[in-house]
Length: 484
Image (cartoon, rainbow, N blue to C red):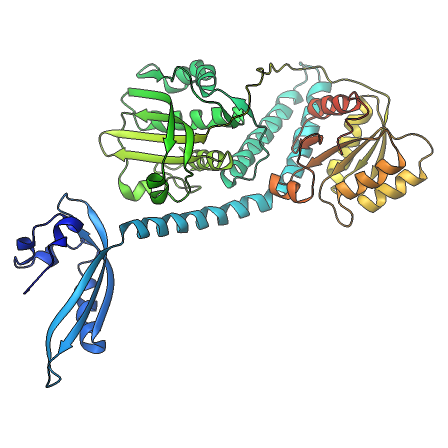
């Protein structure tokens, strides 16, 4: 070594004198690069006269930086190689962005796979849950078959929950968003969390006195908190401390430059911190991948954190994780602030399946689900007409001598889709109400022009009571709120 720039101090923290020490460069290469880089450097230099390499080099602070090393051989007048000149560039930020981009591509591929199977799977689950529910309503409690049917129903519910997790991860689930105060969501989950994590883990909450409002699905945000709490509990088998915090923050451009999927501006931070075992960098790099788990076989599906990632991304937010082995882990959820006014809190209640006598036209291309839906409607007193697709629905309507009060139609069907059928029948029946149903994910529903304000929509799978209640709700709406 004959000369090195003083910039070495700014880029890597070393005084220039350090670079002249024997084996300084070799000893500070990342262990995973030591076998590759020197050999490639030598062969490229003497075969091509130049070398361009990217590798990790230890900073004076102990961490590693990605460096781009460009070198070339210099000849003298006799065309002999006499020296090597080169430069170093810190490309750590670029490498981090590339890693984030590759991760995003991988997650998107998994998401497309999850969304692709959702439609058929949700149709089948509707049939399993629907018939099980009808049997449970009809069987007396003393019937020995009731327990068998109940197990089928529970298995169907677990399958539906698994589908929702996959769709949440893939960011293709239909969300019911409303204005939320995250403090209220945290408070509502407090009792459930205490039962979930056990007595040997101390739960504390540090909530902002006046948090900004966010636009999100309350049930999905609760799922985020529960999944993170389960993850924290498993990291603290001997007990510890779990802290949940809300805080108003503003993400600046510097943060966004190093976090590709983040957006600048005001956000509400929801952080979940544990004092557990922590995670090494190689585990952190994979934790949001579906089916990745460090738990023993049979102890986890590997979908918990993937679900968190999907829900946060679909809500327009950003998730970051900070962890040290032996110290603990913090998950930081950033949800963008909304300027909309606060909405009144909705109190849900379970209703007895309502009845009616109106005439309903059902357009559904899945035969098993069509039969089940017609059975549910008839048991509630409704008069049912059925069609195997959109074109058939128009023929059935034309052949029917009498009013049609409601059209229940699948969104995506062979030939005419649900929206085209609804618009055509609305011209023929001015008072017609419409209820769209679908097992597809929200991006497919949006593409077919359905998922927007004022449209009546029911996601598959559904059970008898839910369908009957939704039908009654749509029929009782004012004439100007037909849901088309």
